[in-house]
Length: 223
Ligand code: CA
Image: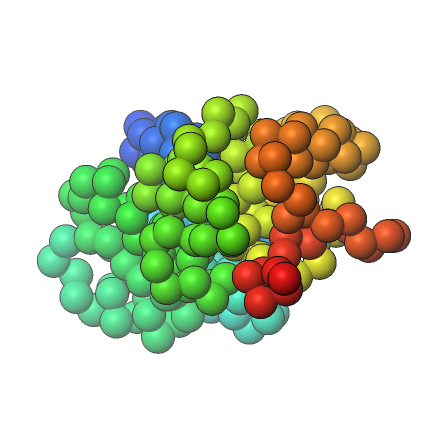
């Protein structure tokens, strides 16, 4: 899962980005509204954390422009504590949720998790696919109750596939959601990661769809 953090306060941006990375996400950072708008317009994010008070272009205008051009990714706005009008304006502009400053990073993480889950159609913090369980809260996975030891890449891959269970996901899509913008991307490495993940899962749940990509079987597909 890949997140964009748009926040001009350098320390706060770093604090959020570090916490997100620690929780297993890939993170791109922007420090003004123009840069943030450009990245959100051109890269596929699973969620965006967007400050309202930004240099060059403010956060409300940024989310308005994204929505006007059909960008539907979940957006969590950061607002000033006492500015209720900002919250209303943010939601009206197309934001999905907000957190008022000052906040606890844990709250932001919980809201981001919930936004990503809901966008993928899951209401519970645990996503289950047959014997495989993904605990989005603890960033952990297990098979038949046995914890899986996954590298950060393997976890991101499993998490993306499980959030999109039953759907065919292309290699390009996986690359775009597993690496940040500065990473030297090579879609061939995805095959290697899928191979390793299959081995660790021990159950055959990741199907290769010839010429299209991969599909994590939804429980209804299992016999
Ligand atoms: Ca600000």
